[in-house]
Image 1 (tube, rainbow over the protein chains, first blue to last red):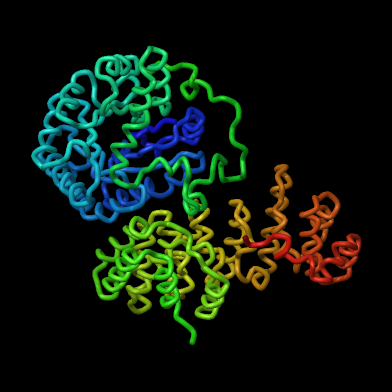
Image 2 (spheres, rainbow over the protein chains, first blue to last red; image 1 turned 180 degrees about the vertical axis):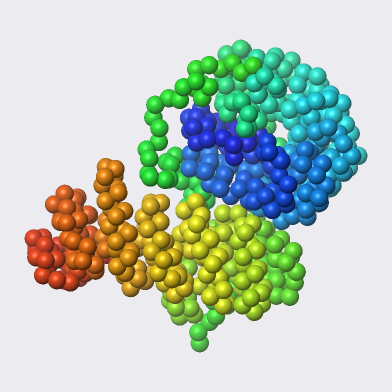
Length: 307
Length: 287
């Protein structure tokens, strides 16, 4: 069983859900983020939050996958002050909905003053609501941006045990772990982590407080990032216990602190959830049979490497 | 004395919830009576976390009380958090326009569980004529449970929807693999236009090599004589046991000698209908 705690499923097709389910992914977390094309109205942002809370959870459930999300104002759109102010006003309304496991993904993109303002405001909101936090570390100027993100968390008195620093790499991991935060890694081709590199990090640091995710989104990315990395790690001699922690247990422990994500959700779903969202592995429209031929190409588990 | 729906909901929840949980709910209900929208949002959001999501345990007496309090109200399948959310909405009160505005606003940002709760409460809300448009939006959902919250086990569609909306609701129920039996007033609502739409839908399914739900014939039967009996003839000739029983029931509802003759070719089924052993309820029960 795997958990992929960073997936932008709204931009993925049902082929991906089928492949993920076949590969053993039981739960995904979809962070609120930007969508490629900037939003410019609070209304579209609100409707997007409703979509990741509503239809996307339902869509995932049709493939037997439990879907959770994080709610927040992302760093890019924080730079649109009018939009940001409007979004901050509606966030509390969405942050308490069912399946919300954290405030996120928040943090810095280019480390501007506006990004900083709304990052801090959302840390305060997370504290007020008792929610964990998912931090997006910048892809440019990452080392300084990651350090600064952790500085700000400490300034606001955040418990690092409730904060996941995502998109780590070889340059950031030591400091993230040393300062007591959860260190997540996104196995995303070309621009982020590769999984052979991930295996080496596991070899060096072990599994404590490390989380593997795919961050799959609207770009060229791999929804099987977590199961592929798990299998590669096992093949490379990483202990099974470590693999289980970084590909399942740690994500559950970190985000389960919200009270909105528990193992029973997929092992033994409640009756009302079964009737509402989680109807096993059949596709609703037209009553199609679940696909039985194995997926090919990237969606197959036969080629494990992501680089 | 006939209880109001709010009273009944409170009674069932008091009976089922632990003391602390019910006390929390009572406090939220009080606050909802005169309080801010923000308080209501928080209470609605917290309901499943504080009260859980267990099904409401309702006896036959409870169901009878519900029907007496509001004709057609069928709370089977309601969960504790759904009941609490409907109660909170009712407590918020307001005249028809204020309630409708709040209802629309809440539905707009509702998550699936909230949406199911809000729409299930439709039979109980004030000024239902002002809620009809939003109920229509609920029917447009891609999430079956939300669709069924509007369409099933509720007097609201039969009482409020015009023929166009009613017909599309019935068609959509078949289209998304839902059922017709739990739609209240299904038989009373049969009309020639719906029969035509369903006839075309059956043809579309058959052309694609796909099965036709036996329930489809229920709405087509009364008008089958005008539309031609060929479709029912085909079901009688080629259908499985359930489909043939459905065809028989449809024929029994169809006026004219031709339909009667076709029914007579299935004497066992005709006899079952005559004695009341074979009915739509028996064939396609609402669980």
